[in-house]
Length: 75
Image (cartoon, rainbow, N blue to C red; front, side, top):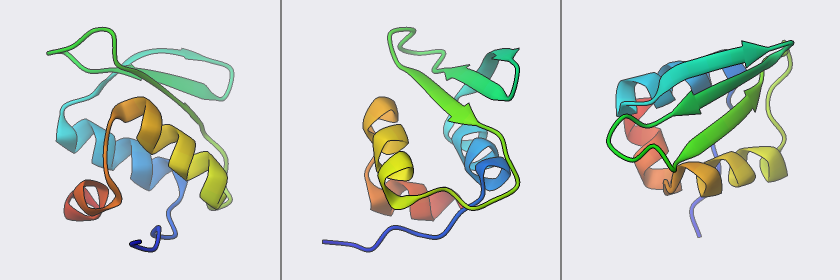
């Protein structure tokens, strides 16, 4: 199993945008992103200053249908 990278929410949102996701809307500190090719894929990222916890990052990757290797390519 590949280790998860240590990443901040801002870096994760930037990587998701490079993959093709766009920010659909923002509500408070939560950014809601969607993929233009498949509108059923929606990702929620809470924007704060600390790094994301492993479980949170894993849940976001699951929402985005991404692997750790794919995320590392775009970071």
